[in-house]
Image (cartoon, rainbow, N blue to C red):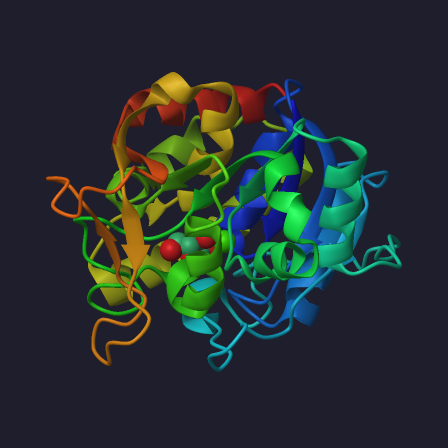
Length: 308
Ligand code: BDR
Ligand code: CA
């Protein structure tokens, strides 16, 4: 399966990188970096360090949007730390970014592999929106998009009603929703059930030392955030769940909905709504993961990373 990863690393993004490395079913064609958990420059530094850590130097890493399409930039250093990777410190990378923008890399790879590429989006989707705006024929050549985004019934983590990735660039997400592309949404409703704890970490003792150390140091920070700000024990590993369902879709149960995003309201900006009762009588535009086999996913994540 050919995949482009669009990401804002970010602690849980980094865990998704590790899981992708542990999924030989996935052929990672490129990594495109966006603003999100921190600035695009810091996210790019993190992506380059991660590809080095994981021995994925051959995969092009293209730097993308430094700002959302319309609204002001947001970053989340209280959640992911000053560097974006919590307490983890990775060696300076010797990998250099690709000499092409993220949007152009998406356009080039998709055009060269029509209807073969899945976009796995685990940050604000500004890069994908820019690619679609630049190349109107692109949508019909993208096989599908899996996006960790939004929340349907679960409280928001950026505002009371909005999830962070959609909150960062709701206008970009609106473009995805109305692009006609086969879209799978992995919202907080399922990801906030997947809480990674010290007990899970203890089951990873046989993982490669450098990777285990990274997971330990990064998630320690992330767990402190969840405890202090959200009263949650453990940390929600949102982005790895979206990666996992590429190869194990049976980990979740989907509902098809017509989904829209609020762009104008002051207090509920970036909130997703799913037309549960077909009140609008519109064709569904997304498959939304609404239930998850939590232990099945944790077992998958732990077993795959242990086997790396
Ligand atoms: C999403 O926002 C970011 O903080 C995480 O990396 C994840 O992609 C969860 O709302
Ligand atoms: Ca992310």
